[in-house]
Image 1 (cartoon, helix red, strand yellow):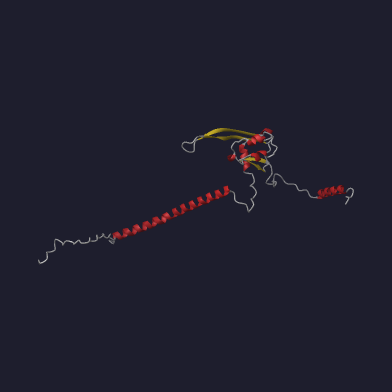
Image 2: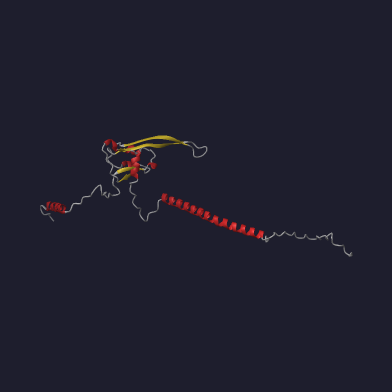
Amino acid sequence: MTPFPGSGLAKGLAVTLRTMTRKTVTEQYPDTQPDLPPRTRGVIGLFEENCTVCMLCARECPDWCIYIDSHKETVPAAAPGGRERSRNVLDRFAIDFSLCMYCGICIEVCPFDALFWSPEFEYAETDIHELTHERDKLREWMWTVPAPPALDPGAEEPKEIAAARKTAEKLAATQAGQAAAQASQPAAQAGRADEASRAAEAAQAGQAPQAEQPTRPAEPGHIESASPTDPPEGQS
């Protein structure tokens, strides 16, 4: 069917009229914070414990806005006879957000999950030089990172979470056993004290039981000798 001439213009004007007659809603920022989606690219948070100073994020950054400084430390051998190892220790991790174009390459190439997107966006400064935020500020933004989306209900539980839960359950069982043992100790001590008091009372009353002397069985063919006080046979 051939479209009617001018139908596209009529549809466009209809959209314009509907928009013009719709009520405008103004969000009262900053009194009312906007509800941003979880995948909002606000700033980059740093989880410092996972960083191994591999420098991949700084090398892959197209704007060269990531600055990393580190030094090496010697780690002693874990076992006797082993050799010492060296590891990198992070000294500085800074991002210049006046140069960053929020491409997310640094987050994608990080092999140890040390960088995350945060929906935080209130980091404006009066001086452009202050837009270079150091690792302390990046660490604060890490706590604003939203939780990852829920897994498929039918998916298997990650091995890391299963191992952590088993360890926690084992620790809880050990602590419960120790608490039960500590609770049973006063009862046992009270029982021993009662037995001691009863024995003391019996000893004072002269009713302490005497231990029986074990009797030695007579050996076969053995005849006990007569008592030296008994008279011999035939004598009165």
